[in-house]
Image (cartoon, rainbow, N blue to C red; front, side, top):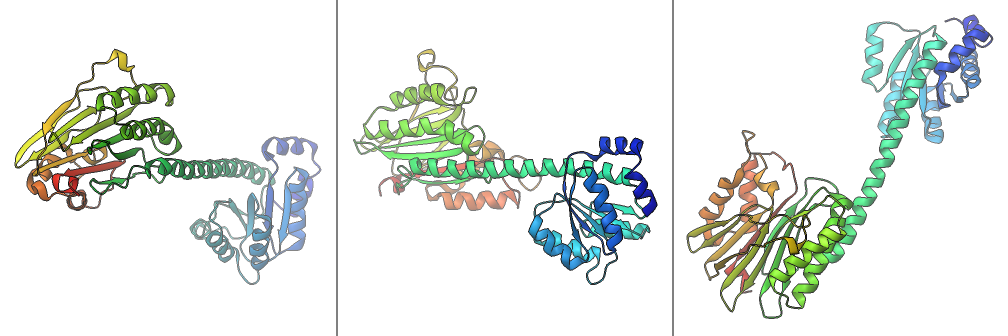
Length: 398
């Protein structure tokens, strides 16, 4: 559209009504145009429909103006003295990681110009003379997309803050129970937020050791809220010497009462009693516990519901027990290990884990297990959080 057409668009009452319909919300617009008269005309048109226009008459000015005003949208000329529009856009995109729509307005009309505009970071391309109706409609669309992008950015920032808060809170509690050298374990998160798996280790007054492995639903603050009642109760009751059945029943009811409704915790609880040379355990919704007693292999499956589904008074808790000797090695992990995928895309599964503990016997450690696991993954990342716990008689005697 010519300059006269722009002037008509600013005075034609019927067209004004149409343009108001498509103009959308008011935007902060950086208009980059080296012809001052053309820039003033476009700015006047945009201003009529509520947009705030910041002018730049060269690429260098555009870069500096963008830094100052951080606009909602950029209208970019191509041919300018100094830096052209393509070069200017490349600099803006390199400097600013938050997405802002850039629409090219150019006298060039070849397909290669359009493709080059997209390649350097442009989002659309209008050939001059520009139809103001189509331009305002496109600005409206880009403005909506930019608003959604800002909302997503703010949401991500909130999530990151919540994840940081969750880590601080949970580590405050877990640090009180994670420093026992007799137990080896690792936890690998599949999410950048706080991990939904947790392991807590507490010595008992009679010289034994309690171990709790939990797998919460979700990640971040959501998971931390669900884990906290269980961890605090486990630490306090282990210190006071409560029996394992009392600890499990109490934690089950605390999870039911205080966790987010509809959520539960899968868990494994273990008690090592060196005086009686005995291992006792409770497994609820977590994978098997594998025990190698001097070459004799046993696997204990979950026989209980996860924590927090029903009240303890409604449940018949079932426990496993086994002898514990100087040749004993225990391995258990959360389902992130079982469900991780090998080179051919297959889930590693229970047989693979069983084979590892069988092969390495009482020389097994978390370092060895994780090394074998990573090799089996062949570069694939776990799809879920993964906790690995190894207990050996040698480690227990330290």
